[in-house]
Image (tube, rainbow over the protein chains, first blue to last red):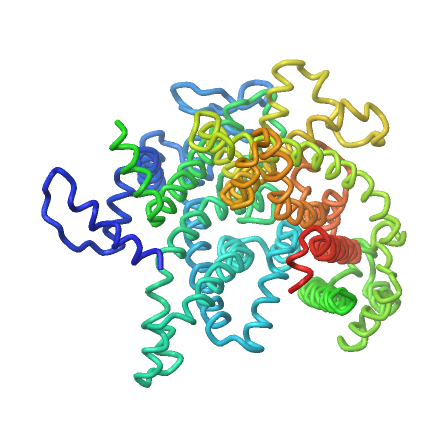
Length: 321
Length: 314
């Protein structure tokens, strides 16, 4: 639907005064071209790439500072009265309440937070797409059961349930990923289901069926490729949600196990020290906000890029100038 | 209409049953050593066995489950292992604090979200709209506890210790009520305003594109009347739906805000009960919250069909 519209629009765009040659472009390339023109989204993408590099370079930072992320340095990190040391030559971004290096912990925390965010989103996307396609395409009682299940998951105070699950089975990184994925997949499944419900009635599905294709083949070959745009958009918006979710769980002590540094667990330790050690609060909070903010802006950009109406607006804007 | 309500009611009961069963399995099967919690670390093996027997934990799972459901059906949430008081009463005490927190914040977020959403929709792609979009993204990017901690930090840097000690847990809610509630209300509402702004803006833009809005303009109504009387009223339906659901859900989701601001609400009760292993309380809170969610959803469904005649017809 929207994709064919998008392609139809390329034709007038091709007859621009510039006289460029008209060539067919795939929806993906169109979307990417639009995304590249979106300056804010590009800045966000850069920030995300830098953050990933930052996380990957964690051992380097440990090497440069000479501090490991789990060791305490009570002699240099804490003053005579036991208060954490502020940013100085030894601890570039200060020390935490038991004398560990905030910078090094934040870098390792970036690894955990990003990994949990991305892995949970990937898991939620796979499950969401499978459930959504099955539910929307098969219909009948399968749809009733799955759609109701999505409703239940979506309408629930997930933090509460997540805490119960996490404390029952123990807090760990894999458990956190599963819990977040479980509470995120329903949003994906609902969107996919809606798309599939309308796709199902399209002529090309009927054509495939009349050629003798089975349900499984139609779902895989004809339906799935048409879901790429909405799924990409939603997945890019699920990542920041998952990162926020992880930090909330870790803050409450129900996420990653407390010895693992993550932005949430650091903030949890920092909450009693914001009066005396602002860096302890601001370093993980700042990194967390910058990351989720960048992901959210990029997600918005991706949505605009896949939405053919944006093209029209950009062209309009240009001609008026 | 009656059939619709009955169907929704049955669905609500089904949800409650599903939730109770999964939480029962989760809490009682995977982590059930209450005799250690009640008897303490120095209890003898005999004492522990006696405690297990008194609680009926030595019986088969099916029997325990049937008994659990039976008590639940009568509204009995069990007795706390630690305090030996009925869970229902403990929750009742805490529910007041959480309700005050959620209702106070709801006024702020509904007013704020709708106002900013309307302004941003009527000036789409203008400067105000861009600021609103930015604000929405900031709001969506922030975890609740970060908002809370930053608010506390700001307060501390302005007022010093005098401002902060208000947010230490302890005194009953009535003491310094306004001083203590304003900041939690703002912190909680801040995040929700973002979502409501986005929702109102989208809904408003859809409605303002409708034919009857053009008709209203064509017959010479003032812009204000067109936007607020004709537009906003129709645009409010999804907002009201979301509002009902959120108020219900938030009863169980204010854990973080309660923790940061030292409010003794339902969320804190869960966190404290988890730390000490007081399973009946955890189970009770989850059930009470599930009930709130189900009732809120039911009210929204019924309210929706009154607000929007199209829903009633189909």
